[in-house]
Image (cartoon, rainbow, N blue to C red; front, side, top):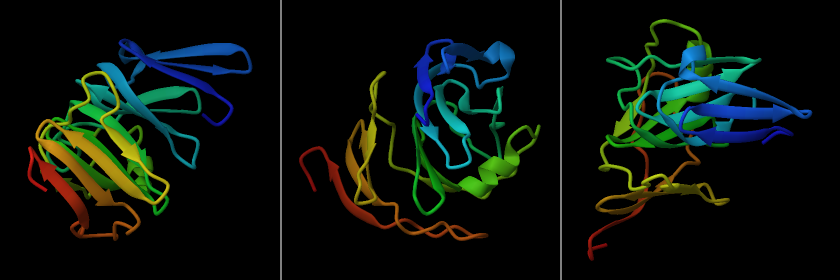
Length: 178
């Protein structure tokens, strides 16, 4: 990732730059829980999806987490994090999918209270079980595996400032039904 070797693990994330390793854990401020997925933002921030602590970040040698709760990210059990070309961040976890603006997340880094305009999409629980549960395609489609089926979302539409709009669901499969 960006000339860095990034390894997520049960205790946090390890980053190697120029032969030197740095380890970021909950004791140092990173969101607690096993790291399930990492995404690199154009700003250089590593966004870290954890199973148990929600969304963490590493930037400039410092680690932190986005506070969970009302008005912010509600899902502590994340399986994946993706950053779309249009500036949206997509989180998949046990409570479905959350869509936010990257600019809002970057502004919330290091704050004790993060009031974030989010779009929550109830698609059911992620089905990753320690493996990736989602895939962002070059076409901009985000494929999400859940315990009840697969959903394909169009990520090309930017999330507007203010009230979020519903995403376009391109396909859904529940059991044997499309």
